[in-house]
Image (cartoon, rainbow, N blue to C red):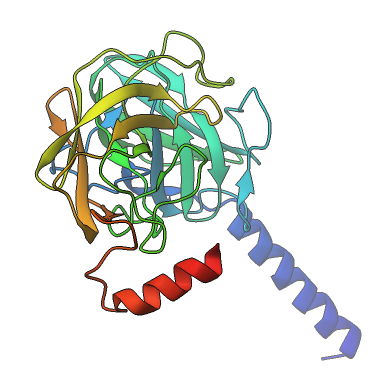
Length: 283
């Protein structure tokens, strides 16, 4: 075969492969709370109205992740849309990011509760439906590992993250970050409103219930909630479990570091002496 012909053949195969990839049907394999990653069937595994959730699958978006960067947040991101249908009502979700294997979105607050379905559409190709359960509140605590386990994303009032070298002490005020406290009355696509959301919210640190002084949207980030609480007495350790009960539904169980004394927590495998050195260097 002549060299120009071979080049033309290779170019044709490349173009056809690209066209096939671009038009491949998206698939959906699962949807979870974006903070807790609680699998279906477990407590608080339903998707709460107004919460951030993650959808997994294939061919869900552009080759590199695209992130929404301004308000109002879009319902179409780089050619990707994600729709939810519950009780005959279909609404577009609000997209935060989209990539080939994952979409992060906000479930609109006015979606009806009950069993429903999700469908993704990418550049004109629509996925088969994925069943989900929509509820009023199902809280998840963000973790630094982005897996629902390990160190919780909890900060002090100056937004310094809690850690083994920056432990809380009994009586300290802490801010817990998560999603799933419940719906808001306005649009979820805009800058979120602040103020306590309705519902019975409890924070359990170790085996003790903490005093809660705020439970509502963060004010900075759509779909993201803050719970402000006071670390209760009698709690100590580098990995103290923390959980939230929202309207009777229990969240995931990540950990925070608490020192009942004046220094770092005492039971880390690193040893208290090394932790003190690390804490001093951090200061």
